[in-house]
Length: 286
Image (cartoon, rainbow, N blue to C red; front, side, top):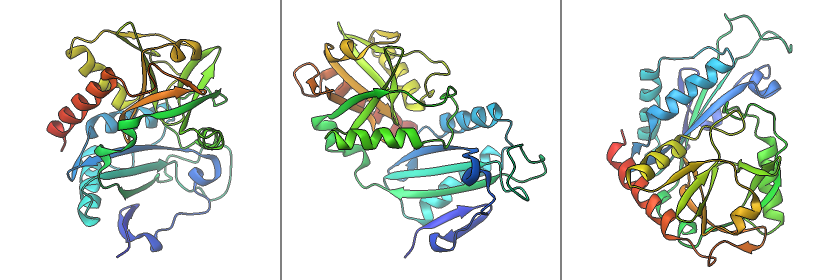
């Protein structure tokens, strides 16, 4: 049976899903998105993703297509219809389809486009990569300046993923003015002197929902956290490195630009944070 997706009020087989060729998400990347993990058939940190979605919409002066209670119901319905035990729910809102292509925003009467679909990922929390860690390379950060808005402008991060693949690595960390901003689809961290370090929030990075939860849990566990930029050299000399995201949770980084981090294996801080995050997230899932 084909996957059931949601498009502007309708639940449809994916083969029947359609949006207009004039949709501004297609023409201008004029849209925002969220990805919510599902573990055991329940949504992880939905409230955080809903709050960030509203912030992104507000920053772009974009209408909210439905109330948040309805959005939660749509998520749950898709999880049920597609029998998702472990996986992801992808949500995208665009400014909608105007009568023709125009750089200027259409009138507010134009309805936004709302699309959601699921991805089944059995064993999502038991990724083999978490046991061995991932390898990253560094690349220049050449994205636009408002990375705090979770837009669908993902071409450069996609290019970064391909650069990493070509180099035999798993991902890329982006560097601007000598310091790491973030990974192509995750926030970046190092552990130095037992202290967790990660770049502070600003327009330079995405305000990660998993990031916020992990840092809160780290502090509750009496781990020391410092929010400041760090360089690739610092990261290569660190005791540990890791990334966080909604789909990978806490993922150890064991090599940066060919140099091993620490002893070249996942470290205890990342392992403990992953354990705590998954345990607490499952308790709070809805």
